[in-house]
Length: 152
Image: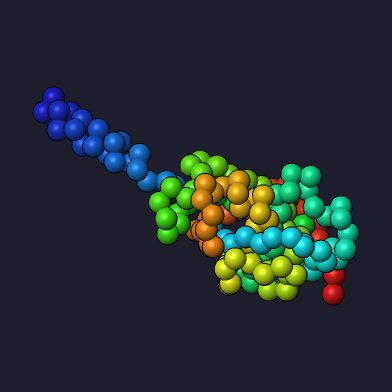
């Protein structure tokens, strides 16, 4: 019995040391770009200035999360997980953004096409250290209350 414990201990130590290098994903993985002003009008709330959170942490939904406008007003937790250039992502930084627009029809063009989500300049800068056209992100809908007001 004592021999089995001695053999098991190195295995457990090895497993614990290796597991530190892996992150458990709690959301979906996609890509993010950024866009600049002007932000109005938006597909969700038209010309209404009050749609933007005071933090300026907002985004335009790509086709993957647009859901025919149902994503308007939803809150998403977004975290940069990788980019083509090392050191781009702010480690362990997660932001919460509000969906206010539909990326393919946004007035201002995104820095990269066909991304999952297009973040405001402030939001993109909150999770990146280096300006990039696009990054890989982990995102998850926040359990925050939502208000869907898609404008046709």
